[in-house]
Length: 147
Length: 145
Image 1 (cartoon, each protein chain N blue to C red):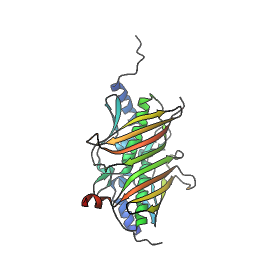
Image 2: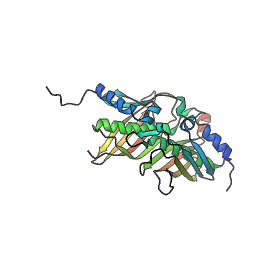
Image 3: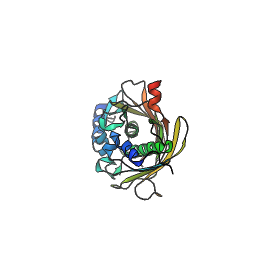
Image 4: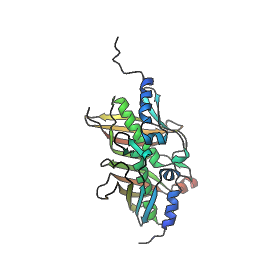
């Protein structure tokens, strides 16, 4: 597999997002079109205090970011991208205090749009807590600046 | 004389904000409910920690998603007079414009309330209420009464 975007570059990309830094997001790996990342389940991420289940917004942030990394991994060169749409299905409640891992595949990239799908899980990859499908616009800033 | 009508909106929004304060992630994002007309609007203050793309800069899609999902839940609880918090089954978010680092307001409307599931539309705007930065559609699982 070609890795024209190095892991170090991708980690720098992850760190450059203040929101992901604030949440403690960590990019694990980026292969050609497949990215993995994780986030610790901190007490301040709880969305339901009665059960301790994590807020859906944290899952959304994780999957959106890992999806973006998968797109850049597929394109093999850095470019500005922006999420066009994102669908999340919550398959089951996550276990309280468990770290969340996301694995997202970019299965198709056209000139303008890249398509992804993936899962988030809290231990067993075969027993995911959420699934996602998202598409991303490519070369967003370039278009905006020249247009 | 006993008052059987719903309490006034101001009391209800205080009640709503007390509920919001008990939810750690909602507290972290700084979400607060306000009343616009007769409906609650959920406000997410502009905050440097919510930036996803520092080059623009723009709000992270996840932060906008969290606001939309929270607004869908809160709006549904308000409009359907629920005391139990519904669970999100699925949410689809369309990102229309990059979000500036300023206050973002989200409001929900119930498209259909079924016995078990509510179908909810939600939209988020910034300074211009006519120019949404994101819209969402959610299915929420209603708790058994």
